[in-house]
Image (tube, one colour):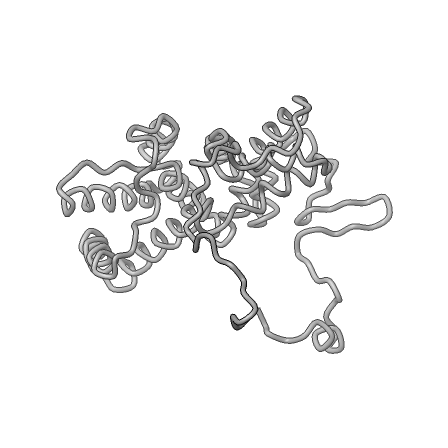
Amino acid sequence: MSGRSALESYQKGEGWWQTEISQIKKNEVNIRGYKMEDLIGNISYGQMLYLLLCGDILDEKKAKLFESVLVAGADHGPRAPSIAAGRMAATCGISFNSAVATGINLLGDSHGGATEKGMKLLYETWEEARESGKDLYQVIDSKLDDMLSKKEKLPGIGHQLHDDDPRVNRLYELAEPMAAEKEISGVYLDIAEQYRRLLAEKKKRSITMNIDGVAAAIQCEIGLPAEAAKGIFALSRGMGIAAHAFEEMQTGVLVKGPCPNDEELVKYTGVENRKLSGGEEVR
């Protein structure tokens, strides 16, 4: 980012909106130099998304692997805050698209951000090993010790519900043969696994990879930028949010809050039974 104002950039000859992504003219739509009519029916959703973000068309095997990540993240039921928010919004009389947007707007660093954090760690680890000439596993060990000393959480590890997540197992089943056949490097899958293994050794207990961890490794393998990860996850989880919001709208139930009106579910922890007298100072 240049830090210049839009007006300053425009006055220096740049377009008010400047893009390398799409060129739109009368009766003509071009994406990254390709005619839209040539793309339609010839490339998949995953290939189109990668083209828009990165400027190239993934080969079919990599695109299928990428789409598997999108499918894996699509839904995790109303336990997930984004799904629950979309369903609540759907009972409040707003439009369907607004209900979907409500759910998507809950995706951020805490809910939906671990893939981006994981990708940054994997990219940084590989880059540090290459630039320093150090053994990759020594770099992993050093970085993990540093994270633990700072009480930082290793992204992509552990889950509140699953200790053997079927989504993770399936994504590994798809990715590992591609690494063995050199269709992807396998480097980032290996780094992610080494972080998990080392953490388990240091903690002296079983440690599981979660969906964010394997998604981070796969997206690094196909060269996606880490900074795009939350947006990609929003497109993935958006499918589930749309389905749940639509289902909730069909029930006809109105104004469903985050929990029933049972007193024990919402605990008041403030001051009890205060009275306002004429001599008290009001602040």
